[in-house]
Every structure is written in structure tokens, then in C-alpha cells.
Amino acid sequence: MSSSPPPPPPPMERLRAAALETGLALEDPRFALEMDSRDPLAHMRSEFAVPTVAQVTGNSNSSDDPCTYLCGNSLGLMPRRARAVLDEEMDEWAARGVCGHFQHSKGRPWVRYRWQIANKMAPVVGAKPLEVGVMNTLTTNLHLLLAAFYRPAGQRCKILIEGKAFPSDHYAVESQIRWHGLPPSALLLAEPRAGEHTLRTQDVLDLIEREGASIAVVMLSGVQFYTGQVFDMERITAAARAAGCVVGWDLAHAAGNVPLRLHDWGADFACWCTYKYLNSGPGGISCFFVHERHAHRDDLPRLAGWWSHEEETRFDMTNRFVPGPGAAGFETSNTPVLVAATLLGSLDVLAQAGLPALWAKSALLTAYLEHLLLARVGSGFRIITPPDHARGAQLSLLFDRALFQPVVDALAAAGVVCDERKPDCIRLAPVPLYNSFQDVWRCVDVIRSATAHHHHHQ
Image (cartoon, rainbow, N blue to C red; front, side):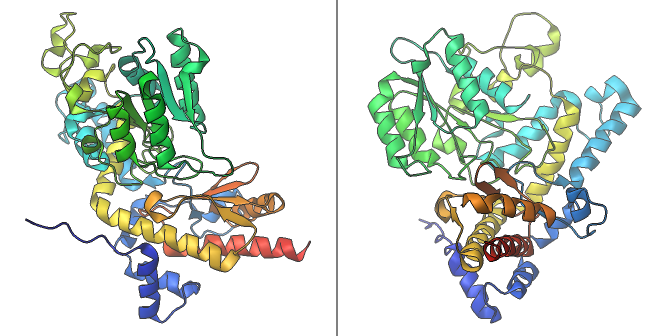
């Protein structure tokens, strides 16, 4: 029997070992330079267009140096390959018109474009290509999947979401409940304990056990958008299925950010957008997952369209619906090639980097960010994101109210792009594909100066 490899040492241990080797303190800016020179993914940064400080501040007198972009949790930077693939499809359209659907100079006939995406996306979410679909945008896909999987019957009519779910999930689920003519009490919320920001896994499991018989669908997020908490998807999925519930995941902040094993975990469905950690561009196309065990079910009351019909007989135009197998049987319309093209380009870049290397660097970058914040800034804020086994590339910081705006302003003026949520939260996401250890050091240096300046003037 082959034994599984030992788990890698915790990221802080690896950073301390590197500091010992280099003889540099972790807080020394030269340590960041040294880590960048050793980073096996450093070359990936050149695959992306990194805006300059002048471009992101809108101040033409600002520096032409690259900005410090820590906002991949909201919109990833543009992979150069995404533009290249889009240009190729535009050229194909110009040169071939409708013929590009079947004859394509790059071997990507538009009629089968979905398979290009499904084959490359499947490893990112731990699925089989059969289980991956590509269409629409995230919330539209949630509605289409809930149409098939939310079948309230008798007392089993509730949908469980987080109390602080992303607003679009909340609106979508609320409206599904209304659409089925059910009362607002069919919405069940999982809330953190008083005074806590993140949900305890055990509390979620207890809630499912207590309410299980009344829950039709459990639909949480893989990574909580506000706190950056990674949910224990494996245990929650198992518990929900054991209670007879259907399980769906919103992976908007998880896909491309943390390891996922959707097939093995056994979720019924999942959806994700592709413009955050998957860098497909603003409003990019969404992808979804339907487990293989549903691949040949024609009893699911899906909302169908032409593209849901099986590929082989689609053009026979019989009007007798035969769903395609797996996720393909849920795709209502043909693939919008021009937006799928940028995702295809981005997935090529992701594959080039390799997922294990990305997870390893991500853990290091985020641990380094946390260490520098605690060591160099120290006070005036707290980190609400859980420790390294329960987070991805995001730290959420709650600042003292008086400090929040001065820090936000200082970061913006210095060309550090991040994400604030009033009244007191700043989210920082060092993304392993294109962020450097120097990016992290610079960001913390700006926060440190801003807080010191504020205290000095009090």
C-alpha cells in the first residue's frame, strides 16, 4: 500500500525557515525580495496586465510603477492569453462567419465550445468534465439549478443559507421561496454565535441535524465573501445528504482559490462566477456543477432549452426533448463564444501554473500578510478571517472606526487596490498567480504609515 504524502509544514514554519536561511528578519523588505526570487511561480506575473499606479489612481502625475493589486477576490487581472484567445475568435468570425461553428482554424468549433471549458475547468473544482456546465452568470444559474433541485414537498420545504450570505444569493433564494408560494419562514439562516464573525462547523451540523426533516436544500458558500472563511464542505455535504437534503454550493469566492473535490464530496450542484480568482473578465461567464448521479435523470423538472437537448440529435429539430447527459443537459442556450473565449485563455494560464503550486504559494502569501500586519501594524484592527487551514487568499480586517477612512484613503493614494466594506472592513487578497511578496510588504507598509500618522495627529 502506498502511504499518502505527509502534509506540508504550516506556512508560518516555512516562512521562518526561509528567514533563518537568508539571515533576514521577516519584517525586512529584503526578505520579500528574497522570497520573490525563490518563488517558482514568479514568472506567471508576466502573463498578466498589471495596471500602473497612475492608471488606478486616475492621477496622471502618479508613478508608472505597477500598482499593488490585492483585489482578485473581486475582479482578477487580465491574463494576456485571455485577450489572445478572444482576438482569435474575432478573427475566426471575420474570416469564416457561420462556418466557424463547425470548421475552425484553431480546432475549437463553436458548436462544441462548452467542452473546451468543461475539460479545463473540471480539475479546478475536482469534477469530471461530464459534471461541468458553462452558461449565463452566477445568479441566473442558481435560479436554473434551484428550478430543478428545489422541490418543496410537505414539511420539507426550507432552504438553509448563511445569515450573511452574499446579497444576490439571499435575494435569489427568497424569491424562489415566494415563487413556490411559500411563507418567508421557509428561509432558514445559519448565524454565527453572539460576538463571533464566523460560523462554527459544529453549529452548522447541529442545525442540519435539528431541522433536517424540514430542509429541502442546503445552499451555503464555499468561501464566505465577507469573512473569507472556508466552510468544511466535505462534512457539511455529508451531513446534509444524510438528513435527506439536496446540497448546492455557491463557489464564487472558492473556485480557483481553494482546493475543491466536488465529485468526491458528493454535492448535488454548485455554481461559480469566473471573474474573481479565475480571471475571465468583468461579468464573465459562469460555470456550474451537477453530480454524475444526476447525469441521466430525465425526471428532474429542469427549465430546458435547445442546448439542453442531446448533442447528437440537436439539429434534427424534432421538438421531442432528450436531455444531454450530465451538466450539458442543463444548458438552456448555446455558449456565448466571445465571453467563453477569455475564460478559455485564463484556464490555460491556470493550468500552466499548476494547482498544487498555487495552493502552496497562496498559503505562504496570506500567512506572510497576516504576520506583517500583526508585527508591523499591531493595533487598531483585528483579523476576522480564520487561521490558515480554514481560509484561502483573503484576509478581512476590521479597523477601529476612526482609522478606517484614513487607511482606505492612504491605500488608494498609494495605488494599493483592495476592497472596503463600510463602516470598518478592508479585504485584502494576495493572489498567487500574479501577486508577489513585495506586493504584500508594500500594502502593509502603507497601512502602517497611515495608522502611525493618524495616532500622531490625535
